[in-house]
Image (cartoon, rainbow, N blue to C red; front, side, top):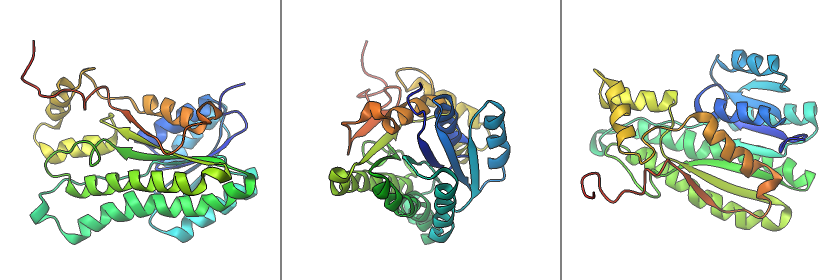
Length: 263
């Protein structure tokens, strides 16, 4: 029996990138999946998982719209009967100088990265409580809480807020069988990171990623499925005594004191 056999998992941002990587790993460990995204790529991706034997339902829903998420969760309950794991993965990042950044761009980060997590958690949590417990996995970042690069103020603000969300929710529901843990990712090779590289250097975005890898002790960006393995651990009973935690998964990128000193 695999570590997620019999568990029902809701994953937001599941059409591509980190969400898709997590969904692939969850399918490997025999979870039943309810995948949420606004992208038209969601259903073709889900069909690939089904061909490999996974049990998958999909919902085109916007994490900024609570009513759409509530409907998706209610249909998940009607189909599977429960939700055991929630992976809050949907996220955005648009780089920009602080003084030049519009309020609309600021609010875009807040609406998706913070309110999106709030909205899906509020839709799922009552069902978890009714079922006697569950695991909530929050995709935060090393950005904001530990480190930051120029142009990331809005993104850093939103991702740091999720650490507070994780800890407060974990304390509030610990005695009711709910565990809440955050993953703090460095850089993975995803469409979002590719987009950030294009914003940084439109003429040669690949050089941005190459230089980024050079600054990481492991000398590479993560694959989304590597993040999926951590998410699977946090979603499974293997992490049964873990709540309110922040797990850094960054290839060691936050370890070097400098990029020029040393032997």
